[in-house]
Image 1 (cartoon, rainbow, N blue to C red):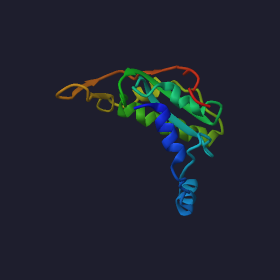
Image 2 (cartoon, rainbow, N blue to C red; image 1 turned 120 degrees about the vertical axis):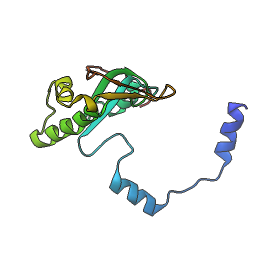
Image 3 (cartoon, rainbow, N blue to C red; image 1 turned 30 degrees about the vertical axis):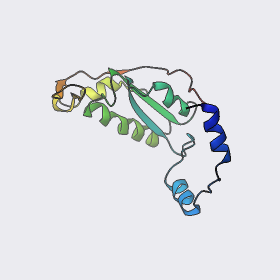
Length: 144
């Protein structure tokens, strides 16, 4: 494969217009531009295969990014997941992002909610873990 040949083929291909009803539906249900119209909370493990910088596309907007210090995709516990909507609820009710101790909030849930399921092992391994929220400032999003 040669990139230049692919680019020539793409440039010569007929243009396809978006379906108007599909565009209306997309605009009514979300915003793929990274400019949300309402507050957003994201939750990600620092060692996720999707770099934390991708969530940086929301930087400067009404977004709170939550990170746990673990490796792997979706490597957070139910207790940590339950903190995210609480953070969002606090933002909506107060009008600003609160600076609560996220690990304390997650720690209020019992050990059955702090089970980490590691699907990278066979059979999957389960382990009760301490809450792992950390402060992290991802680098710049790689695209404008």
